[in-house]
Length: 163
Image (cartoon, rainbow, N blue to C red; front, side, top):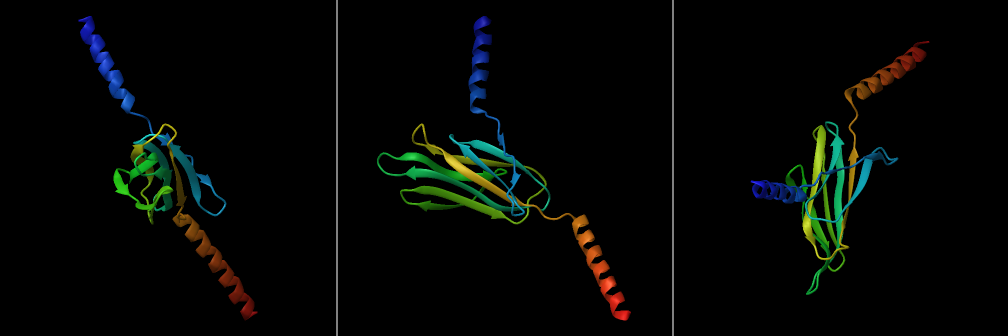
């Protein structure tokens, strides 16, 4: 009985080693009206999450790694980039230098989004770097306030003309 419970505990421990929690990205204002965050990973299947509001524009999701192919490959070879469980990105390999993936979408749904990077690490120091940049879409109240301001300016201009 003791052997059986030890075996079950070992199996659960080994199974949980493969599962890792996603790293939450803290999107910060970049000074140009957008929000961005950088990330770095060392293992295939690394996950990163970020939160967006309804209608936010994903201006850029890019992932880059150093990868040198050949008989003794080195670096991290990216094979897929996933956003919310869907394979995205366009691979733009630069032979002998970088493995570049980039993606953009005009409108995100509100909530938490997950980025997952799949690839092969050919040495212990291999890694990949990424960047997420989103632009928030103004809320309806912002448009209403802008229209009210334009209306007030028009009213004052018309009133000055008639006097």
